[in-house]
Length: 118
Image 1: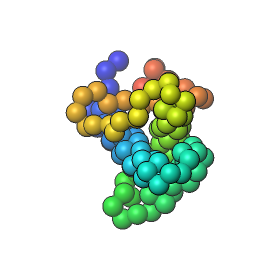
Image 2: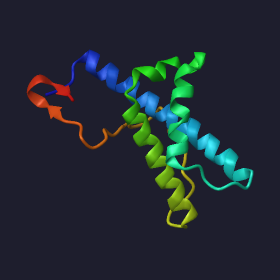
Image 3: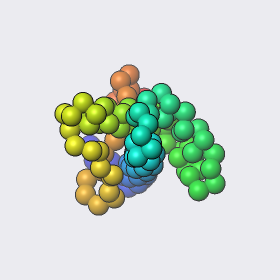
């Protein structure tokens, strides 16, 4: 079943929020790395989310389920660990052009009959 227009817009907003959080957290990781500090742990990064949601310029992050944004930060922490372990290149920023995606955390259920995600 193809998502309707409203569902497509909602998915684009979610993907945009995830991209924004990735890029913002990556910039902070880069800044931290340049200062000679260790990488910032996933749980420490997750504490930034409520702060960003309260900022006037990023209030719209509240419209994205926090679990999805936490998954983004976990993926970034994993990418950064792979860099430090010399298993991968430096993580790159996400761009609006091209394919957008986001992941639901474990425990989410897809109700295809009602076109809903629980």
